[in-house]
Length: 452
Image 1 (tube, rainbow, N blue to C red):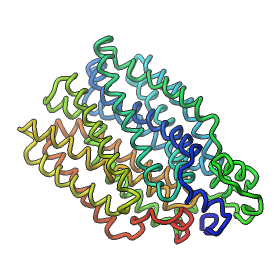
Image 2: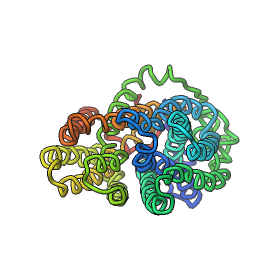
Image 3: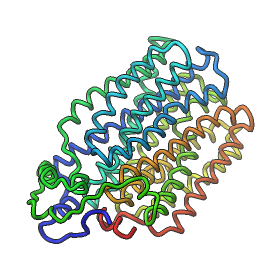
Image 4: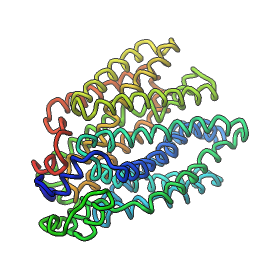
């Protein structure tokens, strides 16, 4: 069981769940979610930068894939380490420290002289990304009202991520005009600027009151509740047990089945979904559909479609249920991918229209739901670890896809590859349909995690 499954009068956890979103919660949510803006910018800018890095360093298809996957590999390792650290030392310490990684190694990426240095810098940027993800997602889940948890912990994070991705592409266009073949250095280095600004804003945020309760730090929890406008006396909080947690507990009953299923769903979506987002510039440039400038402009417009999908999903995620939203996303994605596999090879209209369509439906549902399930289905003292493990599986799947894309395009071709990507989405929908826990969202975090 998490901490408390109470809900009576005077319960501060119930107040946090049931009260409307306060100005303090809104400010905290925005500042924490802005970390994903940096994540989206820094991870996605590599897709545009690779267009110039490949000829600059004379890279083979496998080298392009490995370099493109470097940040995701760093994030995968960091997610496991700092998911655990987030549960041990707190959310706040990690989501402030990670921004120093962004600043230092984003700047370092701009000054490399060979591909080994660039791989190392991008891997370390990924470490900063991995520090932020489990911490921010857990924090948002723990401060959000129950009726808005999906929108805040899932949709808001992904909206910020998409805005960062859009910015990376739009910023690339003038940088190319100004700096030509050296524009990639500016693309990679500019991520340091928003990281500095967000670092200043985050310093004033309180710790998660739920995490403080799980650690038995009652006085600090009372202060954190007060920061969010909720009055709590020491007597109200004194019955909260101290839970420290470990990966051993996460991978034992009753949590093992949950973490394996959520990780599987996360991986399936990330493997298929990344073809319509992260790999877009490389795919379109490789198949020869568009020029470099047109490819980047089109990528930005695809991200705008992704943003629209996420906004539509935000209106649905806390209303129609997680499982229904999953069906509305995964099944159309699979159908569109199959159509693209049949007709996109010789029809630019189908290729372009298909990218818009799968981007919209993917970000409307499945791209967001994995983040939500990885937090709300696990107790507070394991939430950083669960998000770390599930998101690490996602990053592994993205890394695999990014590595395979240039090889697949040169081998079996785009049509065959996009056809194959329909099947992970169909499997995802099947898994969700068979497991009742994925229809989550109606209860408090304590109620959702008390069932094991």
